[in-house]
Amino acid sequence: MELAKNYRINSLLSFYRPLLTKKQNSYMQRYYVDDYSLGEISEEFSISRQAVYDNIRRTELILEKYESQLHLYHDFVSRNQKTDRIKEYVSANYATDAELVGLVADLEKIEEE
Image (cartoon, rainbow, N blue to C red; front, side):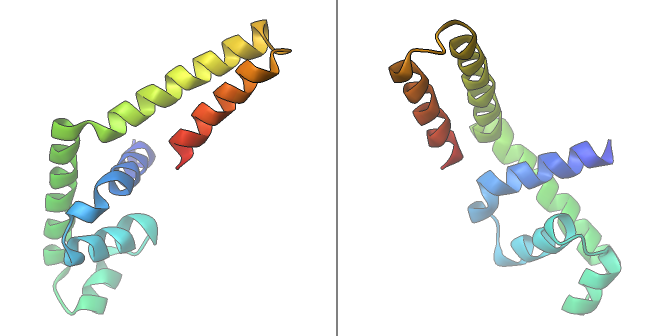
């Protein structure tokens, strides 16, 4: 469960990081990306562990609110799933069609950008 939450928060950060404040970015980067403990973050910023915890929890809620309104992560996942299905279908039924295989590869590259 915790691993799934960490993955989701990291994914949401990928989409919504520019909408966060510098402080929110710093705390989230250290906690979720760099795997700092609350104590390590609190020492670095000379604040209480509770203040770090509260800020991280508030920022998680903000990220979830952005996602509920904008759906960027959900749409990204949906597009990737559909692209994967198309790729599998083309591979199984049209593997020799170089043009079609190339178009699918181009579609995948767009999502990576």
